[in-house]
Image (cartoon, rainbow, N blue to C red; front, side, top):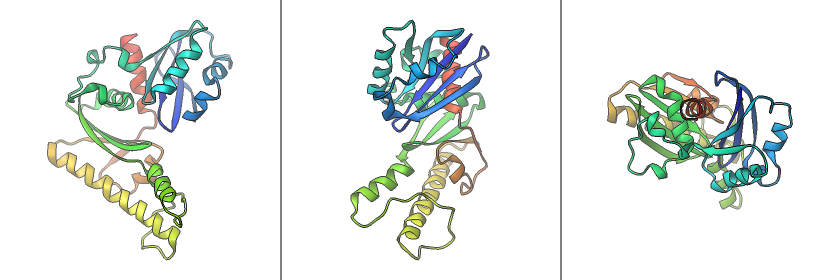
Length: 248
């Protein structure tokens, strides 16, 4: 038996096919906006992967409209999809926050994916930059900061003369032109933001955390973080896979 899972983010979507041990066989990535224009699942299912494929698909989603669109396109098929919040996640992880409905499904999936480490701090460089805390195997909350790409785009859109840039390698000095100055501002700014938030979380809890980076800028910022870190680009999908295995 094979299984289909997915993570619908504000910027991008990742869909994975799992084997009978719930390990990733194949991954597909595309922009979230394409969901409204193309039947992505139909294209994926036509690639000869639907043999022995479970009829239940499981997603985490922070874009309700995109998830509803996928559900609508599956109505005339034998397949159906569920969102992880539709399930009793308390059977897998204790979520110690004031309002669970406000907590993004991707952050829950990240926490479940890292739960085996007992004390873990997950940095996800997505549309927002999120810091999620797992302490003694429980999800304890976290921090949400502006995402790197979104910040760059918003600054360019809000100003007449500042260009849209792609971050370059970590420069050692301030800029000698506008692009270098912007690059220094974002690289140094996020370096300070990331290290400061990590230090604040650690000082508040006095716990030794395993720090895991995921998302688009994980490799870029790994070099500037002053703690030992590891990168796991599949941690969200591993969490969704665990939910599927335990609850479906």
